[in-house]
Amino acid sequence: MVGLITFLIIIPVAGAMVLYIGHPKNPRAVALIFNALSGFYALMLWQKFDAGTPGLQLIERHPWIPAIGAEYVVGIDGLSLILVLLTSLVFPFAFCAQKLERGACALMLVMHAALYGTFTAQNFVLWFLFYEMSLVPAFLLIKIYGGENRDYAAVKFFLYTFLGSVAMLLAFLGIYFAKGTFDFVTLADLGKSGLIAGNFKWFVFGGIFLGLAVKVPLFPFHTWLPDAYQTAPTGVSMVLTGTLSKMGVYGFIRLLVPLFPNEIKIAGPWILTLIVCSIVFAPLAAWVQRDLKRMVAYLSINHLGYCLLGLFAIAAASTSSLIDMHAALSGVFLQIFNHGITAAALFYFVGLLEQRRGLRGIDDFGGLMARTPLLCGWMSVAMFSSLGLPGLNGFVGEFLIFKGSFATAATFTAVAILGLLFTAVTFMRAMQSLFSGPLAESCTGFSDLLLSEKVVIVPVTLLMFAIGISPQFVFNIFNATVVQMARLFG
Image (cartoon, rainbow, N blue to C red):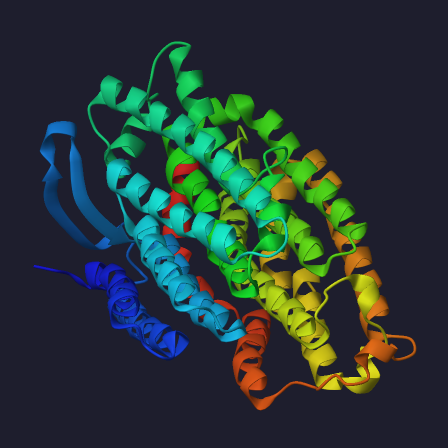
């Protein structure tokens, strides 16, 4: 019997087939219809999900390839559900950002289905299949529909992700030969007492770490990201930063930390050093960028670094109170959701500026507040959300991450706070160049936000305010999962 999660995965695939076979005149409208259907099923998942019960729910398990221990097994907990809901929000947002050709819409829907599978699969073979299934459409979207230097950006994206995937696959083959299972829950139980003995464990640990570090990405494996985000169409950039980057963070939480708790305590200081480098160096790189998409891309690395800081600060700690663990993990889960919304909104606004001007350099604009006050006002809200301004969603997640991290990794956290300062300077410079001063001649014909654009951006921005003012409705989704994971770390 096909369950709710399987239907959720099938719907976008069906949409891609309709686009491929049917040749509709308005492919974006068809894609949005299937987005709405999958969003409806995601809401049904939320309605059936018991937020007070830890562990996996709505599990579907079917035999698949028994010879290698591969099963079709999907299920959700609080972390999976929050990512499913995020995916259901970001994709229609991205489709509304710009008109895409029929082939691009079909590839986006395939990626949509693959992300649902990645966030719900509970067996490595199935998870890896969905994981790779999401990367192929991303490569094609950059390669075929990207802008200048798209060949270079696509090949670089492919090489980084392919090598990372190979390393992770080899690592899990080593685990399978040692333990005879690919099941995440079983492997997590075995990880408590040491998954693999001897020095071989470090090769396995390193393979999984490398594969996930490339996907986040984590310094110094991040250099593919600015090129890919800059070159990709606006809607694709929104999906790459809003959802695809979360696969790496999700993998760290679901795979690396439960499977190698003892190894993480040993390697923790080195990992935290790389994380702090991501947090501090990325906004410095963003500071000197002249291309707005490239600037937002570097800031995305910075904000994903906060998620990893909260996770590894408590995972690598020898002792930590449950309160600090709950704070850090709650902040990480919330920040995953917040970053997906806010970063996608920033790319959306950059896309609006590019549509009006034909360029997106920071020096190509000036004095926009006099001409387009609504566009500047709403874009400022997204920037302030990314800054972590109190009253907006970014503040809550970052505050909880720093609260939990300070108690267990004070030195690393203190250095990481410099990232907040550099991010603020970067955004202030951008706002001054774009919004202030005399109106640039090239901007005199600009239109303010159109009705169709208001319909897209106003609900997303109101969600930022809702989470910032009263975030409990989001916390309720994953509180039980946080408590369960905190006990695991303890």
